[in-house]
Structures are given as structure tokens and as C-alpha cells.
Length: 194
Image (tube, rainbow, N blue to C red; front, side):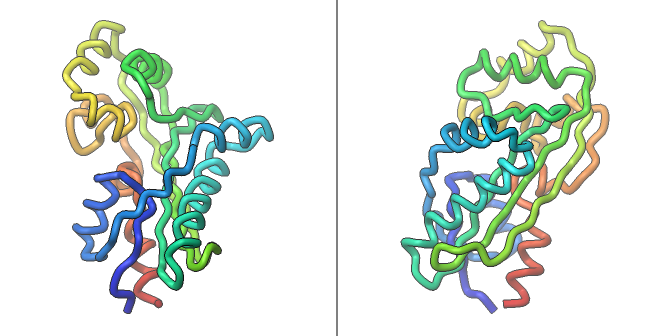
């Protein structure tokens, strides 16, 4: 059995999910410039799912090159709105624009994970959840955003499913851990086989 993994992510939520599932982990951020990768892949007409998979692998491989013989976990989550990639907001204005786009529609939340060792992927998995947002007025969305602290807003995309964000949705179909960024059940299955 594996005694620990390295998490190539600064995400507090991903670390909490691993801790809650008794997977010992050490955080070593990959510091991959996601924007450059996304722009390049979008030019090649890559789907949001392919972008998510590539970023998870890139993060895991980058850290695993430095951490010899260690198992490194990379992860990435994106929103796919009818084929359009939606990334985490960098400003409150961007967050409001995203919420307006999602307003009253269904979208996919895609979470990809990759385990790497010595710079190469040894396992990967992608899971999807379908979320359907209720319809809100511009004022209601503005009010919702005004109640979310910056740290929460920029860390959890535009909705925090385990908090107030749940109230934005008419329906949620999929694994809660996937929606929060880490399909941990499959990770546990794979790690258990090592």
C-alpha cells in the first residue's frame, strides 16, 4: 500500500478531500501557467475535456520530474457550456459574466486526475457531472456574488457546491467530490491496487 502521494495543486479543497479519505498527501504546487496551455489547446480546437485531461497530466508530470520515485497527483476541473470552455474567474466582473452565461442552462463540470511517476503518466481518469442552474435576475446574481468572499470565489470557480452555491441549481447529477474537483473514489481504487 502507498504511504503517501504528492498533490501537485494549491487547492485546499482537493487536499481536504484526500485527508477526509485517509490518503496522506504532501502539497507541491506545479505552478503550471494554465492560461498559456488553454490558449494553445483552444487554437487546436481541443474540447474542454481534452484541455482538462492535458492540464492534469502536465501538472502531475512537471512535479513528478522533481520528486523521483514518488507518486504525484495532478488535477484539473473545467466547465463545459455547450462546448465552450469556462475557466475560473480572475475578477468579480468575470464571475458575474460566467454566472450570466450559466443562468438557466445545463453545463458539464469536468474533473480530470492524473497520477505520474518520474515524469510520466501512469494512470488517469476523467469524470463529469451535469448541473442545471435555476434562472435568476441580474440583481439576484449580483447579490449572490456580493456575499461570497474573494478567497472562496477564486478558489471554487463561481459556485461553491458544498456551501451557498448549491442554492443556484435546480438539479445536480454526479459525484459531489468530482464537482469539488477530485473524483476520489477512482483514485482510492487505483492507489489500493499499488
